[in-house]
Image (spheres, rainbow, N blue to C red):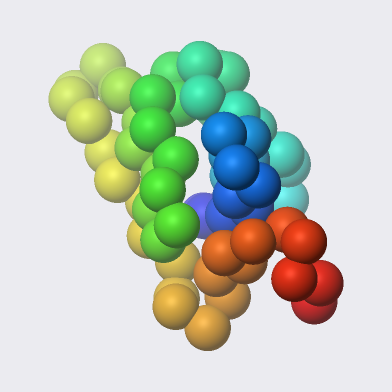
Amino acid sequence: MLNAVFVNGQNKYAVINGKQYQVNDLVLGNKLIQIEQNQAVLNTSSGQKTLFINNHNIKKDINDGF
């Protein structure tokens, strides 16, 4: 489950199942290949899997506070 996305310039983080990841990190054996403002893409053995979050939970700029 994609919980949140943090974007600060070129730095992008995805919170998946409560843990923070960056592009190229392994998430349960699957490579995280892309992070955008409302989604994260994993490369799995069965192809790419896109995780989405609800627009109300998107953290678009880490400098804006909560």
